[in-house]
Image (cartoon, rainbow, N blue to C red):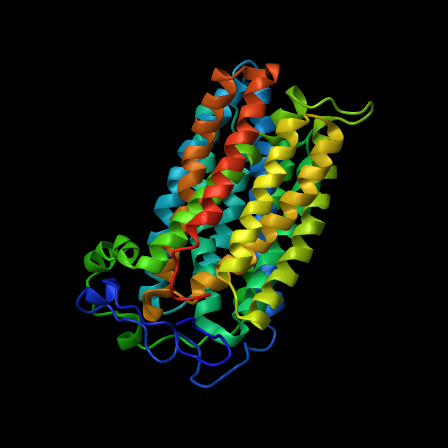
Length: 444
């Protein structure tokens, strides 16, 4: 039977084998962590703080990954920039995959999120300063690995705030607030990255300082009540907590949510990571528009569409009590968006791509976050399980650069055919991501 966010305040309890089967690891109870039974509102002021915290995070991710890092690598090794970007992005994403669930488990164990948000935010300043000061591909890879590690400490904690402190009936609104961080952050990241294209080290530092400021404000203004030792499983050996990570994937619904997100994110990052090079080598830009400037034009278009679909998708999914419909439809829209530049590698086609991709990806992330928060195997281990799910975002980022660099090189390099094939593969993966949500049974 479908779960109604308005009729039932309890997290779903699955009959599948989950982390509840691990002795000492609590399963879902009548109230999710930090949410008082019977409440139907999120804590006052939490929504704008969630939006700010996620905006800062995406500003750094987009500013670094979409503009500054490709430019830095191009300056170091222009001839092999495609392969070198793939190598740096892939290796650093391994750190994202490892640190996200580990940090989530540690914040579960501590019973607090705010200190981890603050610590990760402050550490981002040092990581960005280091990244801006290195001059070889090897050192860039090491520095961005450190950056990915500290940012995923921040991300794991802030991602867990929604299931911790927001009741089920308000999850769509909270997911919309979180989701708005992506379009706003994407725009800011592209603008900041383009503005500092000639001063890369300064651009890195500005991005790190923004995350630190957001961490300070969130941890100062978003009050939290530490969970009791019994609630956070403090008596469970840390080794057993780690062993339970992938146990969450034995849950039927959680597993399919993981697969769907992984496929869509893989398709998205195969193209996103090479957007600057696509504009340099594949798209015939109008006179007077440089590739960095083109990124700064495309990103706000995508972000505006993303903001609209994030809010509308989140609110409608609450009102209609339908999650799978919106997730599947948005993944298909993303597939259509990726197909447009494959058919027509022109500047107008890239503008259409930006708008459609924003609509699809924004709605997907907003509603998928709400869907996932309703099928977590264990309410008391929300951060750990969300850390496992976040591997569906970090893991594809490991594969995407290698997959993309192979496709571009094998199918035509910078001559055009490789990038066309890249768009086609991305569209196919998005379709598969849409189909993956159909087997989920716990929500409609």
